[in-house]
Amino acid sequence: MASERRGERADAVRNRESVLRATEQLLAEGGGDHVSLDRVAALAGVGKGTVFRRFGSRAGLLQALLEERSRALREAVTDGPPPLGPGAPARERLLAFLDALCAIAEGNALLLSAHERACAEDKFADPSYRFWHRHLGALLAEERPGLDGEFAAHALLALFDGDLVRHVATADEPRRFTRSVREWAGALLERA
View 1 (cartoon, rainbow, N blue to C red):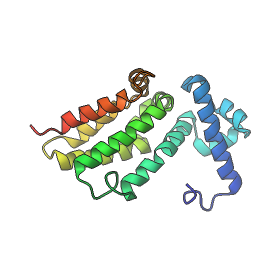
View 2: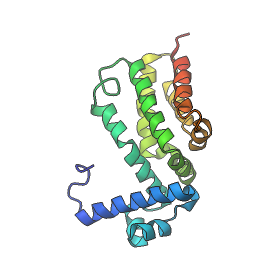
View 3: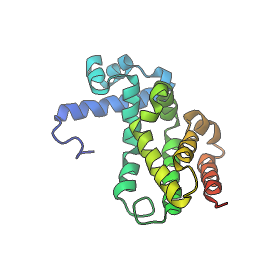
View 4: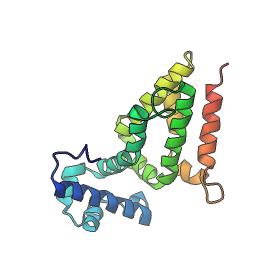
């Protein structure tokens, strides 16, 4: 994060962090419908114009928060050690990636739901989605060359619906979502 913020003024970095923390708090308090630029700005102690200039819209704000949540995973995939990073067989990388993505989903289901609603028209252009899709598609194509990896990647990512995550990952079975995604992916990877 510090490397991404190089050249940015300290107060701008501080404001960005305050805005993202305020967004998290509002999500926790009332879900995605509770998040507005006005409420976020007031809670963060900045002007609405600051939030608007930095994030553009409510959708942009939620995209930035999701991007922050997935940054460590993206870095592990591109530069980290196996099995998330390069060097492991495609199947191992794919399952490790899905496990890590499930952990993000289970820990941020409210954010995913709000993000999906705010970005519904532009879902496939979202930077996090594009990265996840590219990575999954490449691993699927390597592991199952005859499979339409691009479509299969979309199908796998469709499972990461925030409302579905919240429905499946209950207090009684908090890791059910991860287990189910892993089983589904394992079945997809089985060679015919």
